[in-house]
Amino acid sequence: MNINEVARISRVPAKTIRFYEEIGLVRVRRAGNGYRRFDERDLYKLPFIGRARSLGFSVQDCRELLALYEDRHRASADVRRIAEATLERIDARLRELDAMRRALTQLIASCHGDLRPDCPVLDDLEGASSSR
Image 1: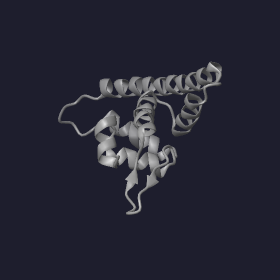
Image 2 (image 1 turned 180 degrees about the horizontal axis):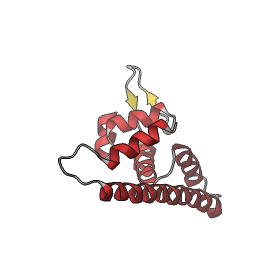
Image 3 (image 1 turned 120 degrees about the horizontal axis):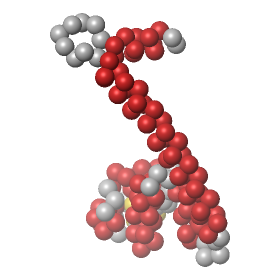
């Protein structure tokens, strides 16, 4: 199968497939004319990687998860460890986003939002840039 066929069947854009190839998540054979040639295994790998990425798994996590998926003697504890580490990263990011939200909410509340030129939002941004 060529890249367009695989993209259509797997519902993974060709650009994404090329990216996965570039970073080594999928290994694609080349035909004599240089075109990519995919097989049936690629049809499960591409959506697998896409779903894993949509859940927040890193590229390295995807490598490990694919290896574990293909290893029929794997320990589910290894999969769980990767998933838990990803969840910890997501939770940390959510805490960061919540702190950003609270700060921005306070700044917006302190801004008069009228025709006056003074603006607490800009003052805060200026203070943040001058403290660096």
